[in-house]
Structures are given as C-alpha cells and as structure tokens.
Amino acid sequence: MTDAGSDEGPDFEPDPERVDFLRTVADDVRGDSSESKQLANVLYRVSDLYDEDEDTSPEEIVRNVKFILEVNERGGLGR
Image (cartoon, rainbow, N blue to C red; front, side, top):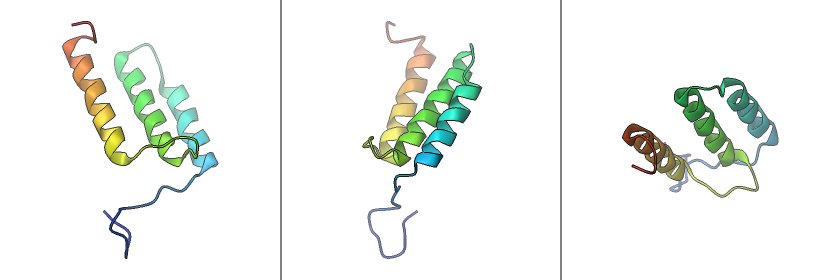
C-alpha cells in the first residue's frame, strides 16, 4: 500500500508515544513461552519503525521475523 503521490510507500514518522505504547505491550506479553517471546520481539521490531533513533523498514522487519521463526522451527541457532 502506498500514499497518494508517493512511489516509496508510507512514511513512518517518529512517534515516541507509539514507540512507548508498543514496547509497553511487548513487555506485558513477554512470558516464559517461546511464542510470547516471539510476539514481544515482533512488537519491539515494529516499534522501531516509529523510533527516530532506528533505521528500519517494514520489509526488513518481515525478513527478520521470518528468520526468527525459521530458527525457532529448527530448534535454535546451534542446530
């Protein structure tokens, strides 16, 4: 999906309130299970879109999440 008149896609302007909200939710859902940790990690990565100190894109986040899921499916990095 792109903005009208823009070929580069949507802009993710810095939004400290959104960053704080997403990271608070991530901290709340993080638990002992691998699934809750994965969800928390995804929320943190999404919050990076709105953090002016981070340089990422939705595409990078998708690649990162896919990698995390593949590693988890294989049983970890060491396997």
